Image 1 (cartoon, rainbow, N blue to C red):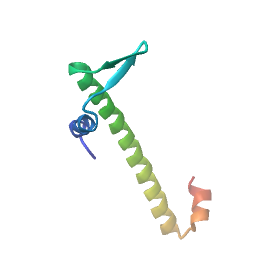
Image 2 (cartoon, rainbow, N blue to C red):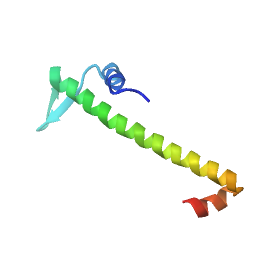
Image 3 (cartoon, one colour):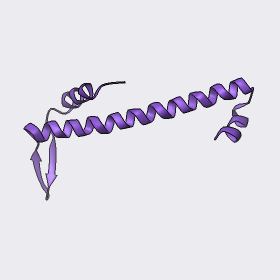
Image 4 (tube, rainbow, N blue to C red):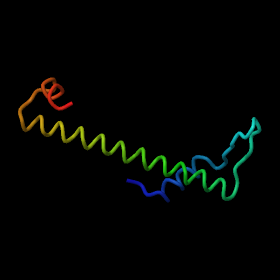
Length: 81
């Protein structure tokens, strides 16, 4: 899994500028505000990646259990979901 710093760098590369709308006025984020927006995005992405990894691990564990028990996919869905 990527580190927060790697994700921040990825965000900055994909978004060299960021615009925030405040009271209908578009303002370009600079300095600390830009860095904070990238850090916030990285935190959100880390949470998302962790969730995706957990879902994948659970699905893999269910599939392995079903295989060990000799269950069909339909039987496994009935018992393991």
